[in-house]
Length: 61
Length: 197
Image (tube, rainbow over all chains, first blue to last red; front, side, top):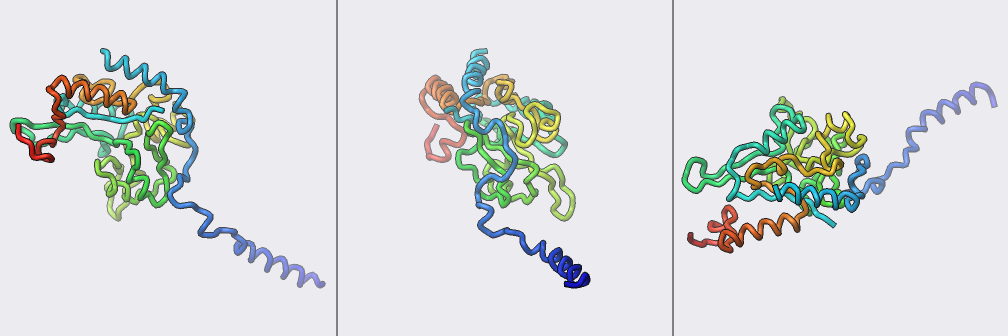
């Protein structure tokens, strides 16, 4: 294979790279949170007692 | 598990706007945005009623349902929060919310509203380290991590505004109702159910 053909093959390959994006409509599930994680989401039990105590304090004033 | 809720007792609210001021000051909310506001009906007439309104952190939040970029999420204790990095400021949540909670910082031409801002139940937001300056700048103070409840409710002088676990809030309100004679006396009750006096 000549050098020119190799360069041509390389250029064609590079130009087709963008066409290999595996995106499909099913890749994104509707109605499901897609943002960054928040540490508050799953540790409600850990802070429930503290918040309940605070609630009592506020309401008893 | 606790389910965090706000309740405003219209019989106790004196329209002092202390909750509004406390919220704006605590979170340094910009001009034009009110995460909380006091609404008064029949203002100036005998029997006027005031109620403090903000995001009610709905169980099945309509804002969450209509968001085209799915930037809303609910914590395990029922606080509805959103990711400002995802928000595109489309305004759908504003139209869906029955309380007018979503607010936008810009009122420029061409519909550029900016990122939506709303009450966070003083729980900050996602993507930034808890209690960091970045979180404060984007979402306001994170009092929940500090073991505190929303400031608006904590400083309410007449205890009209209550924030906490829905069951505990309901117990307090039920006790108040019984003390008042067993009638709900919730604003609009007579109008809704056509009862006199």
